[in-house]
Length: 393
Image 1 (cartoon, rainbow, N blue to C red):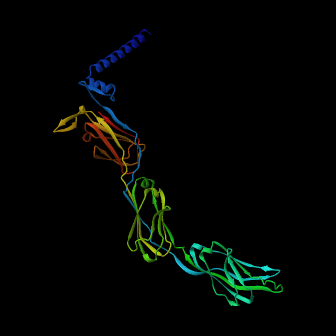
Image 2 (cartoon, rainbow, N blue to C red; image 1 turned 180 degrees about the vertical axis):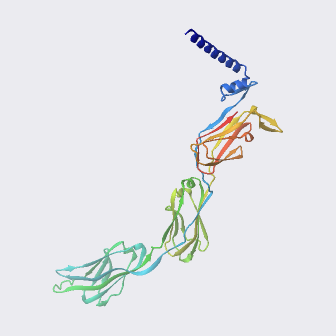
Image 3 (spheres, one colour; image 1 turned 90 degrees about the vertical axis):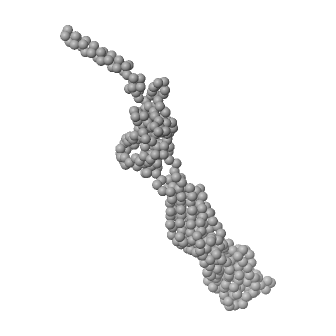
């Protein structure tokens, strides 16, 4: 037991001696080396002048998206917008009968629907059968369009004024009273009753083309244009209209057989699908060589700044270069081991990064200068940087 106690006491003395020697070693180190050994990230003092060492820049960057293009072109299909007017039968009724006597007033009706804005030159025609007596009275939506006596056979066409037409219309047929001759009655028996008119076909009067913008393209959009050649005859075209996402950008008569260009406000465009609608009120226009152009402005690349003290440099032929015992390192941390491609501009000098590592360190001695330094990051693909550091040693 006595020997074990002596052995333990000797070990403790040895530890104390080693600790004292280490403390003495640190105390007798030069101040700059002693400071770097104790805390490499704090400011050093040399000849009463401060010099920054350790980490002089630390930024958590995050995700930086890559635009990749400065212009997007969409060549869209050619098409024709047109209208045509043809004579059509708007409605038909096989027969109608009206009778009027002292004791009876029998009337007949005919209903029909039309588009008044697309219909003109409307006529009513019918045949008269049997022996008509009295005066025939015809009203449209309560307004008289004919009153008079007719003989049997074909009736002359009755013109219907445009202002009387509605979407839903009612014709009523009646006959005048025989008056005091109570034993008689007036009547009209009509057949092959038809409503005729000139109808404008608008089934080809509209056309919609589409183009897609990504979120990135929409955000960086600077100028957007729609260009096309309008093949047409200006004398026969009316109410030509161009809309973007239901916002009108042109209305009038296009410049026929030449290139037409419309600048589109960025506010009219949206991320995802965009619709370009062409309409015509009358005539025919062939839209050819249709192209949508979206020009993107250069995105704002992130720029970070750090400061280097003059004492880290020495003058050589009117230039300041980093002292031989100093190094400036650029350190990048990434969240994964996927391939990363980006360009760094350090005070305007290009440094390319192409790595699959999680950590990447580069010496940037030849790029730095006294005072304020700048690092601009330009991704060559979508990239996420966990942290960027600049370290001075």
